[in-house]
Image (tube, rainbow, N blue to C red):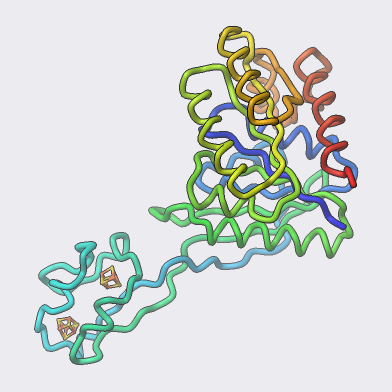
Amino acid sequence: MTRQITVISGKGGTGKTTISSAFASLADDVVIADCDVDAADMHLIMAPEILETKDFYGLKVASIDPDLCTACGICERSCRFGAIGPDLHVDVYRCEGCAVCEYVCPSDAITMLDRKAGDVFTSMTRFGPMAHARLGIGEEASGKLVSAVRDAATELALRYNKSTIIIDGPPGTGCSVIASITGVDLVLIVTEPTVSGMHDLERVSEVVEHFRIPALVCINKSNINEQNTNRILDHCRSRQMDVVGILPYDRTPTDAMLVGKTVVEYVDNDFSSGVRAMWEKVQKYLFAE
Ligand code: SF4
Ligand code: SF4
């Protein structure tokens, strides 16, 4: 049976992608899913060779047929997103696809059309298959796109008979994050000892607790504020979340990223050894009966 782990953090820049890509390079039988669709950067390390591209359709968009429209203006007045202008032109970037205009139009002049919002890719990397996505210009990340990437990763795991899916999750606590953790076996929360890092850890641990998903914690850049690191340790104890890694502030992730490598491929130092040791622990939780 395939086991799934999602690496998340309350905010971006805590080292989530560094850790998930290093795990991918250490795992034996893995599919990688880059679900940080808004700021996808795993491909910089993974160098995926794209095998297949699928169109991703997000929200629908209203379209007015000028031959049927009588210019009554009801749709313009009914759109609470201000997506229909006085010239009865639909601004596709404002349209939320709610279909109210289609419902109120007395002339059946409005149709809701599919709108391509991005691409979902299945690829091959030096560590195994990978599912990832690219958002269209002006499009926003959505839980639906995260789910599409996860579905592609599950298909890859079945096709190539892989035991593990490692998901690089989006930052925050919104619906994209929820879509990235729903149904997984384990979550690893990466945090840092800053005020915002601690605040985000609190919010994100509430989310995983709500969904009853077992969670582990990694404290990155632990030496930038040891007092806060101790506070995080207390917080994790009180929530019964095991801290499986305490990593120092280090240039290794940046240097490794610059040459397109994971930290464990790039160098054997304290930082990369810390990540290796963490993966050993994480595997025990992930494959525990
Ligand atoms: S409600 Fe229908 S008929 Fe009236 S302006 Fe809008 S599209 Fe035209
Ligand atoms: S679908 Fe909704 S948001 Fe889009 S134009 Fe119609 S009323 Fe406005």
